[in-house]
Length: 454
Ligand SMILES: Nc1nc2[nH]cnc2c(=O)[nH]1
Image (cartoon, rainbow, N blue to C red; front, side, top):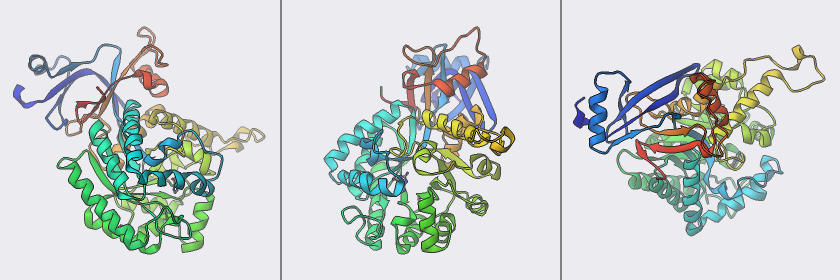
């Protein structure tokens, strides 16, 4: 590459996990980006080409040098978040899912039909999520088309990578009259219009993508589910929905269809290699086989599972089977805007699941003794595996990948992420970062190589 062929150069030490069990420490590398924010080269200190490139970038004013004590990591990928539940974050968690939806959540989401309200809330929400390190979010929107376009505008304005779904839900038995598609056909027409208008808005090389989004089987007619499966194929879209989340939900689907959620979704063409299924706590061995066969992914949302699921997602089993898994905050079923928090809850949930939780049992009978998540695996779920679930070139540092990244600063005032150069090996520093980095430690945020929230 000649010195003219780059748009930006960023230097610093980076941590990333390109494979489930593999931490790579990229000591003092120069990341060379093209005009789309794609990494074209990664040059370690001492590489003969590096000095010339760095000097050329400096003289053109497109060099960013991370100070010592700051670490680059890939941006965090939140695979499951409900945008119109943002005002409800941290409250209304005193009821089971089937009550919570009707008592709190549908009324809250319905308010977003007021696009002025939506604009105000979404502008602040997107900025806050970015500030917490979420460079990619997979959003459930609300039922009407317009507020979801308002959300897309906010993501484009702030520069957050986003996948956004107009929520489709039409079953009069399970959706209130004030908040549903009037019919299956109305839901399909509105979804098509949303996808078309969002694509027009996002343009070429889009930062924001549309997602076909049946809310979950209990709120959708068979006609709507089948139509959405066909639409996803015709318009070549990602798909998201909730799957096998709780006892009530699994029982509802079994009673109505005599199938598991995965079987029914597969039958309607909704399992694809760009499908993200939130939760999936109760999936069977055969369901895991279906997910592998279709290449569909699970968004594991441990925080909301503690409220709604009545069980812990069999994460180790799913990983061993080769199911794609990433993490979600599931706002507002989860109460934190931070995917770091979701990752730490995943770690804790997996440790409880592995050991078992009944102290009256002897240790050998208490739990399955399966291997809990490691810190490296936890970080991989929040970054590289999330990117792979979406089939997007994000979540790790490699040529061809977009530079979506965070600079995490050790020893920032007020932050719990403390680094002792004389005591902490790079691997210690990585572990501390995964377990303690917080909003106060996030010093810089890039999406597509462009600094955001500056
Ligand atoms: N956690 C969660 N589960 C759902 N199932 C259907 N809708 C929802 C929702 O909004 N949150």
